[in-house]
Length: 186
Image 1 (cartoon, rainbow, N blue to C red):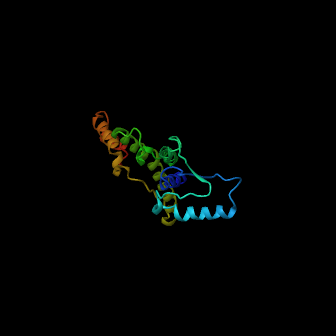
Image 2: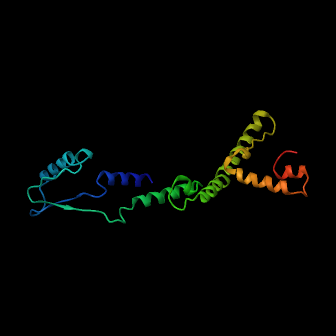
Image 3: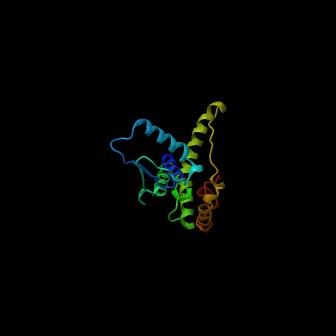
């Protein structure tokens, strides 16, 4: 992903295309001293933002041949989105939560956010709470239980509201049974 960002920046720095090639039209190869002098002149006078668009002055059998990339080669943005999507999926983050274009409707976003909390965040929080509980047992000399208060997670409020509505409508259950089903203490 970082390499594609560097590649994209280099393309933008170079007008999003390889500018071209200098072709030596003399017989054989250009002498090494002339080649080195030409290379130094190109780097000093024709590279960088300050020299953008500066015309070349050619002599001694040199010919300028402009070059360009095909649209498929220029599709670096799609490649970056693909890399970001793979990184997000590897970390358990739905790609639409990091702003990758696609089918980002509000409904899909809500579902992705809920899935992120249920499938990524809460399992990590529960693992951390279990490890912290085990670690605190020794200093306290007793069994310690650390739990996450998921009722305070705004992303899960719709699930919580649905549970409360179902429990409220369960006329066959006692108040204590409803508390137990809701995960509350008696």
